[in-house]
Length: 305
Image 1 (cartoon, rainbow, N blue to C red):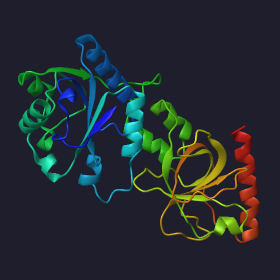
Image 2: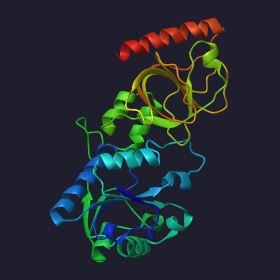
Image 3: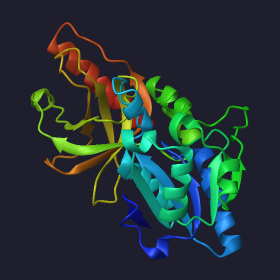
Image 4: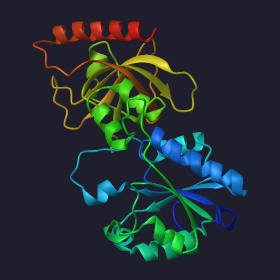
């Protein structure tokens, strides 16, 4: 899969294909249906499959004070697109200039001049241009074929959406989030040196900042952890939050990998939560905290068997 972040760097070979448009945060089952439709159209017409998306997510521009909400930060979204068989991923900078362009400018400058799209596939809730004024009919009038996909529902008649995935994660319901995603959600980031509290207590942890990733319900989770560049996923217990016992200023991931004793500061750690064990708590003493950590690890080991 080839990736582009500006129209000027797009190679001629990446133009003239089927373009699926959306934000695709989570690349959930609804998104996958959209991508699959684009892939089918591409196959039928002898074209390749391109995804047009936007970074940062428009929510960041329009609601800058909102809590972090990314289900899939850019690198994870790109990884999921590759899994879906996408040929070209075009991630354009979503800034105020971009947001203020008219629907006609979007069609003329991006879909036609920039991508020379042969066919556009969009969801029924997708709008483009200033004030979300762009419609599928406008694209058709510009001479581009359009397919509009209705929202996809689960067996329980629930519409798959990024908002519902975020909601599930914020409630600590990992199983429900993964069901809507169709893949095992993960957090990832660079391992940084912490205050060594875990090591002092006999539970050395790998600490990772949550950054723009949506914050799951704070608490302790049974997790799988993998160091980037390695294939093995190791059983672990992870605290997500601010550690009320020590009141750290910024929420982070702290992962204790079982039966593992190696420093890997500066490397990227991937963490897949499996089940939330409990919420964060403040203990009366360090001994009480250590006893609870022991119970958490035993429970996590049992879940991950």
